[in-house]
Image (cartoon, rainbow, N blue to C red; front, side, top):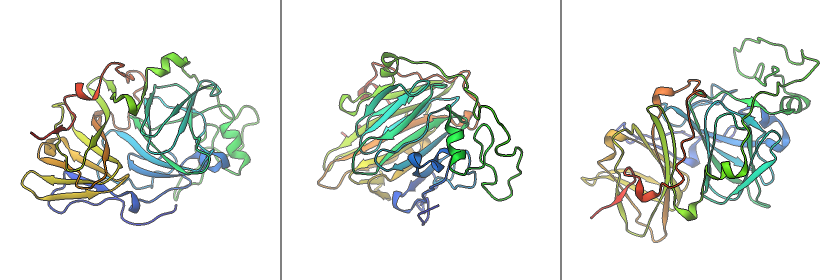
Length: 342
């Protein structure tokens, strides 16, 4: 683990608003099996949920909201290994260009420009890679429901070649204190990782799950009684927004993509001052009283994540969780987006 500092800061006057400061969050460099493979090394910051093979990693926020959320800082040319989840996984390019690959061997690809996003459906094998030539960059992930993972062909064998002790399915052995070893590493002489079912998906099909920042379209992932809406909002110099939420929302997350965001209550009480890559969790019940303001001379752009996912926290949801990505929804069509003050 690298990095230090307090992972989350709470305003003293209100526990329903929390700020995760990027600069003070810990970074984990061995959080999951594939990070032991040189081409997959990266630093991970955990906002919500748990890291599959490092359950002692602290999350930045005090409450679980039903999905895992991470930032990943990745060097040029590196990324993660092919894998599948039993749930939808959303990727947002926080900076730089990112190649998203999918298919049995990652034969299909698309490139996300800064702030673009994609929702990869459950059981679609996929990976990401930083395709910038010189700079390390960040990609944000949101994984709905259960955090389990199935690795693609040869990933477990490649990790073992780099000295990792793990089970046939890639579960790390002896990684944290007090772990009971339930399977010995290297016990199998045949295939290391079962070539589990993965859902095939064509380029046109996946294109419906991509949102480009330049087009201003929001992304909605929906299930029975649960949802995550992700959209962007830019604030001009001096612009103030009142945060309005859908009646069904439980949590609202604001991620500062550029600039600085000042949050106050309508009575003028200061809630938080945030900078680039800081994030703020606001209880939907309290959001109506929060104002967001850009007081700098430069633009401020934020990502708005509105959700009701707590009912499925940690559950296997592959049978019913659907990537309900609306190809026609726009930012203005979402009643839950912040609106300019009159």
